[in-house]
Length: 134
Image 1 (cartoon, rainbow, N blue to C red):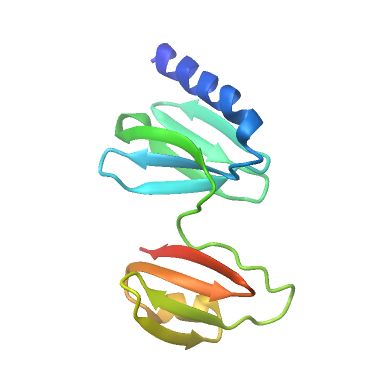
Image 2: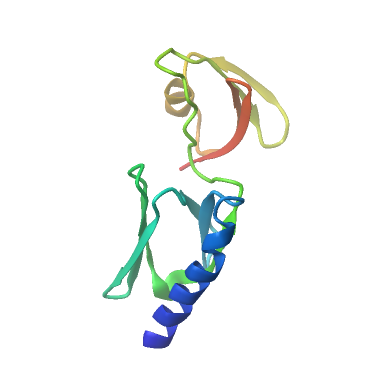
């Protein structure tokens, strides 16, 4: 177990220099699912077989190390991304993963409440992000 922790610490330290280029740390589990956490103020801890990544913006992801298959830096986030509205309501355009336009919604929360589980492309405030609703 110590070897795994030392290896993880080494990987994180080696790639810290690249964290500015790749603002997310991705965790892939053995079932192929991927979750990311922003590298802003990132702290990683390990206790009782669980690796926890927490950043300074309040995101926390925990993984059982026995279920982890890969950890890497990326420029692509998973999950519902934050779209900065600067205090204003933001309408979003939703496109299905297969390219079908699903329309406009008053907010990302409104879209998430109305759409079934799946992967979508969200366009708002000049940004385009991929989200996965679980």
